[in-house]
Length: 296
Image 1 (cartoon, rainbow, N blue to C red):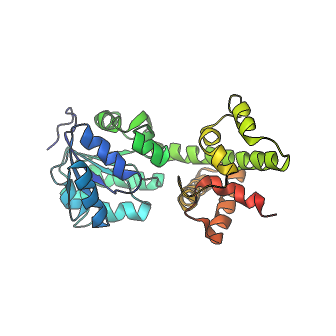
Image 2: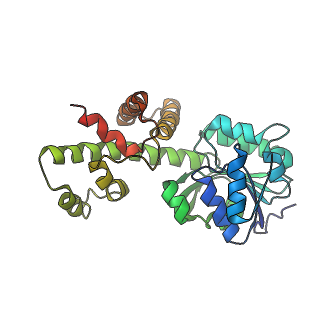
Image 3: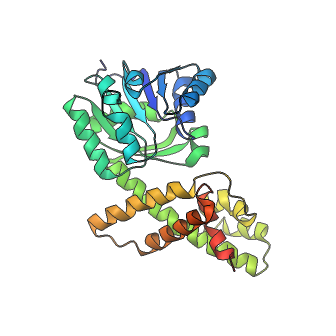
């Protein structure tokens, strides 16, 4: 059983997608004993061959004996499927251990998980991440956390192995709500960047020179620096998928319906992403928003 004052030494990682695979790898390279589970067993086997950790048939088996269990799956229902039931992580965890959810999910789910974990004497931190696959591979993610100060203090030393910015924002659910703010800001920014670059092409400007010039001023953003050139080149077969963003923006709009905050631009951009997905672009990077403007 994990002591609340001891830095975790054994970690279980649930979900080895484009984010989870390298994140779990950073933990193994940092010297932790890492036990993994993935719904597609071949991915778990591949991870074990690459990093040397153990893979297991169920989330419960992976969680057994772990001081900290970290999850990074698709959505609220996916989280529930690996958390509850006879084969869920809670069935394998012991009192005094810690559960961390990196999935971008609802704040309501975070509070639900905290309550379920608390009944078993297990700590909980909601800790969605930002930075994409590139950030996960390079170990420079931004991790926004919600939970008690004590639970966060135990999680932080582990999260810093793949997080450049790790921050407790507030109590349970604050991490997920902060991720919503992150996605709201990105949605409007990518639409503005799309309009600006499409305008530049229509004006026959040298886009290389343009991006060099304005990326040093007030319009600069991560999206401009990392996606501006590929947007001009119409390259979108990488990065954060449109369908993932659609899921995230649905969560934002649902939460806004509860707290009363108007999100007119976010709602508009969410509809644009729906159009792209319906046209077959669901797996393209979110920067493919510029394609809507090129139809004519």
